[in-house]
Amino acid sequence: MNRKITFSLLVVMSIILSACATATPSATPSNNDATSVIVPTVSSNTEVSTSTPAPSSDSNASTSSNLACSGGSSSANPAMELTEGPYYKSGSPELANLYQEGMAGTKLVVSGYVYDTNCQPVANAWLDFWQANGNGVYDNNGYTLRGHQYTDANGHFELTTVVPGIYPGRTEHIHVKVQAPNGTIITSQLFFPGVSQNDSDGIYDASLLLSIQETGDGLQGQFNFVVPVQ
Ligand code: FE
Image (cartoon, helix red, strand yellow):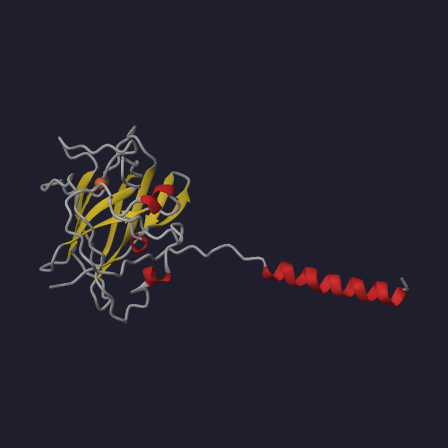
């Protein structure tokens, strides 16, 4: 092989290698502003999923539709309603910090905003959270890991809790009811990305995924709700 041909081959290989390096996918940008957007209502009162599993497309991703209201001008649909399940108890304490030292489960702080359908923040919105502990067990006698709170003047809320454990038939989830002052109550659930049971849980919906980041002291999750104001 003469020098010219060898040199040409080297140039071609260098171009191919360079193109491959450029085509390597970069890391998915984190979504810190998840917002739910869809509306169908599930009226079943059981939490054990018996329906067809959710599409297995990508339970790790918060979809682009979760970004509704980030611009603050366009209208959006209220948060998706999901079954209340059998473990709701009314009369929870007004408490934003449900975490107790020594509690089973990884510490988790969930924060976000409540918006109306015109993407305006809703002050004094009621949020009632309830969930299983890190072992997948609900406190049905008392109010451990149950508490309600109200958004501040900017529509912001913050919940301190633990990552709930799974229990038969269900993936990790946090139950929530949200209501704007004088608005209708939206009953829903929040989910966690990257949980293998998401795809076999018929109640799971990717539009209700928290955006999760690790912190030095557990996990931080973000989610924005859209609710009707009347
Ligand atoms: Fe549950």
